[in-house]
Image 1 (cartoon, one colour):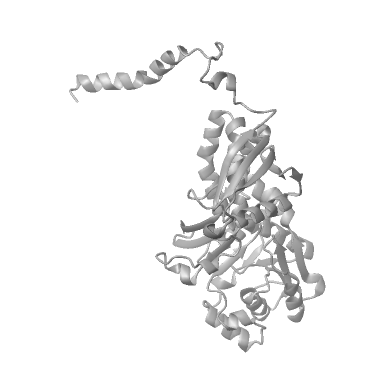
Image 2 (image 1 turned 90 degrees about the horizontal axis):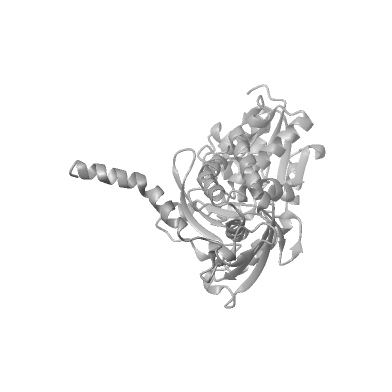
Length: 410
């Protein structure tokens, strides 16, 4: 079909990518390298290796990489330094994983001498954009094969028929109908889309949720958790310092236990349509609130407001696949600069679906001065008469405008 000698396929071992593997071999007649990323999705990945071997993939062409620490340290934490939310709610659990997968896929392409990469994202979704913008940013002349934009297997039924025709092993869950949802999981979140959720008027089924108990069934007693930050990043939970991915796994465990982090959202996809998704982000929900809490005592007011102004732009860049863009890198440099003094601790109360900040402080970088803010005698630390001139100066333009309207009789 084209001059492709070797392709690196982002391979999960599921129905879609197993069909793609066979389809690539038949249509492109090229050597195939499979790449499976462990981002903390909680699934056994060794079956992907065994399936690839059964398809005739050479052992040296099968890559299963543990990327959990890099994912949290180099992608999730930098994003949380900006307190990033897309459209005010979504913590970008799927979006932030794609640039890392693209990065590793390109690294494998270079190492194996591949001249093409392939993914299983559909032509309706955002992931095709995120993957491919990453590919081109890191390897400008790479050939990209997107089967869903080329073939006519545009439904689950057609995929199953193709698999049966070509003796592709299909798990029983697919034959028997499987989950009614399309799901994506990593250490930051698990998402659900499709089938039942395609009706925005239908309430999500309780049986759908996998990581969190319902708030009604959460423990009746609150649990207090201490989070410690250094340069804007989480470094310890309840006094225990761990690797980044271990810290996040701990937050997920705590949040899930207390029913924290569920979200039902209709979002605006980058490709132009509205899409409903449900998300569980227990650890991320706790971390976002704790991070804002430590910033509240350590960040200058105008710097904090500037960060809030930039957050929506930053979120849009991540959502839209521009992680590797110069503008995202520039924003990141500014955000990281603001985090140099974001050091201290936050105590959270976890209770019935809520992550509540109860206290926070910084021994070295706090800008909170009790001697100035007190309602008691401040010993002259703040002269309340100063407020008069401040108010008069800030009101001047409005007074001038009001006088002008009076002259016009308005």
